[in-house]
Amino acid sequence: MNESKLNVSVILGVALIISALIFGGFYYFAQSKNSTDALSVTGSTKIRVTSDQAKLIINLSSIVYANDLSSGNRDIVHDLALTRDLLKKSGVADADIIEGPVSMNQIWDQNNTGQIRYQLSQIITVQSNDVNKITDISKKIPTLSEQGAIISVQSLEYYYSKLPDLRVSLLTQAVQDAKARAEKIAEGTGRHVGSVISASNGVVQILTPNSVDISDYGNYDTSSIEKDVMVTIKASFRLK
View (cartoon, rainbow, N blue to C red):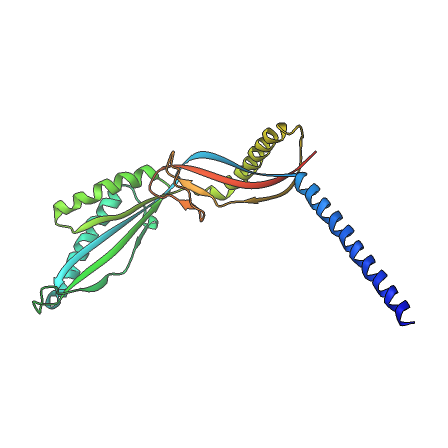
């Protein structure tokens, strides 16, 4: 009786092993077949655009001793008046000007003179859709130093406001580029490209013209009026 049960157990065990081998072989074959029926490629597209917004950041500054802070404030007020006058004569609307608060930072006494000095600063931000006007103003700002102003251009940045809409059209073109590349590859195997299985877009790269300085996290160049907008996409296609 025990021997009979043992034989049945052995038979069932062998059957399970055979079934597992058959199923495993079938699964491997199916996976292998599916992997050869798909082709993954990367597509990209690039277009040049002209910035339609500009932001100019101006820095007013005055360095005074601790017992002469009132003089420093007068300097800032004087320089601010010169800046306002220049902006007004250049046709900048008041709504496009943001005047930040005056900040004060102690300057480290490296020579141990015992005299405490402070730097007073004020940031003026000018934003406009007239890119050329803001560019011209940035060149005039340093000339205010001839009138005694301690003033500098902290930064001049250019932006493209229609990027969200542009990105949609570029993604479509990138998919088309990916499909064209897939078709070229498939030709060498005697097969044809079918429908899209999956697609994932990469980050948007906004670069200076003809730049190849791309990043996995994306780029947004603000230094140039003309920009190259590039989009990449990874797509998988069925093969027929």
